Length: 457
Picture: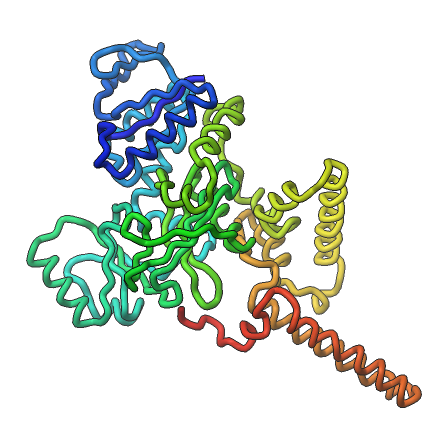
């Protein structure tokens, strides 16, 4: 099996990404994969002229067609690299990741637009344009506010303006310098100050994660800027967000950065060529071997096969409450028979739920709940991602329903004229249900129910 890595630079020690390229080369040798490292700017592209066969030259010499190409140019990807990737894709070469995807992810605003369109949680974001309107920024995003260049990597090109005066100073400086870069402005997630989670998704599965923390008290947590990374086991809701983000952006291999807020999580950004030195140290996993093994094991799939449709993801949500829970079911099943039984019961449960939504009186069906929204989304041919089947508003409605039934069950024995001791015992048992609902998993349910909807992070 032959593969290429596209990388802009010479393999010199002073370049931060070089150790990762060398790790790929080491892992490829152990897996028996011939891996060549090429600079995309040295390829000659010829289109048309009746040449339908493979005809590509590198630094003036012909090169053989690879089985796959792993692009490690990230946010620095330029037009010539995208042109090369499109040419390779047209010739049937498998790309990890593709040209369209890399171009999308390199643009932070486009990434946020794509994620928001499918309902995934992102910080409130707006495009910065000259002259900056500080009043509009204060009204829409508030202060502090995060200022980012549209393209950047390893935390470069990211600033925090603490207040309106500081923002106006920065805007004036950029305008006077006639800055050519484009900027995005984002709401500052206070609960995630100096802290986030990097999740590595490979082939639609979470393979490693680390929590990153700043050691200086600053708001940036990047390991490349002196932050510290520790192994992290993401909760199912966080893992589902990362998996759905990778699917929405059509990323085969990606690092998804997740911020904490007081009501859940938000996607900070996605990376098409994620750095993994800190993640590998934190997790202890051989990440290049994991990535290359996945490429090798899935190489027989049809070239250019599209990613799973959003509707398929919604069905996974409907039946299994998220892709990460399905993966967890696969990993924890001791045998194929147990796995098949577990799948069968979940399919039966989802089927009965769907039949209930169709046949029971509307007053008995919560059509705004997780299953109701998913079914309605499938019917209307649009994806409705659900972070949790019991979200905050659904928990509140469920609690009200449980309370009403419990109160009615508590007074029924007294109305029926039962013995006082029996009536008291039955009433106590009935009232235990709402108490149990509040005190059991998911943790913090009672606290979240008492919070005001839409509380700021």
